[in-house]
Image (cartoon, rainbow, N blue to C red):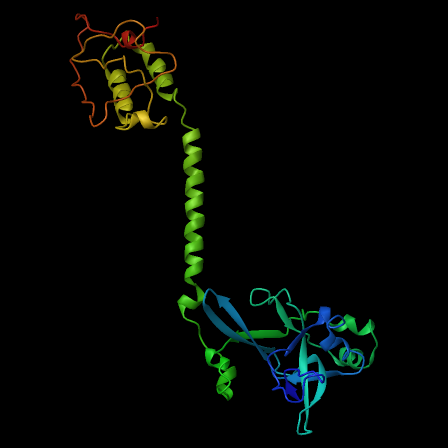
Length: 309
């Protein structure tokens, strides 16, 4: 028989198309007219060494050869028909039944041939009536079915020989296609965005004011000592050139408040309860030189900077 079903009702003058019905979905053989009439009497077997399936990765396709580990023949369930051409010649053709892919081969394709497991399955398919034979039309799940990649030349009808089933070694690019590379980068980017969003939520505006309040406890004893410089450095680090565009870096948005110049003291109530510090765009605050500690001088204390109204 020739693979690729040509129904008997095909016109005698018509050129047979063997690619049109070379496979038949086992789930619908009782519904389609081309197959339904064959089910009662025209069931047959197809014995093969193995079969090919193509793995798609974008525009690229890689064939795999699938066979039994011990190299025994695979037996497929099939249907056949006979067609007579205008010259009176009879052509016997067949179609191979397919079913859903096994769990082990789902990565390769969603369909596979109906493989009859043993002599009992063969007898059921050939001799039993509907619906009993439907019990053997299922995916092959046994572990003795194996596979490996082969040359893409098997896709050419003119290419034949032992090279068709010779195993090849895939390059690193084939094992790790570029589509996986971009997919990984996308996942990493999403994770970074989630992590960054979390870090922003964990940095409230009042953080610096809490630090300032804590430092003010010892300000009377050391008005412009180490605590003041530590605080000022912390404020300068968290001040950004675009502070008015980002709540994370902006702590004061009151334009009426001017920064202290040359050690002069701000007026009472200069700092609002829900505000912070900011710098002018394009300017960077200069770090003041640490003065020599002198308890006798009348210097502005740190409390004056956070004086309550």
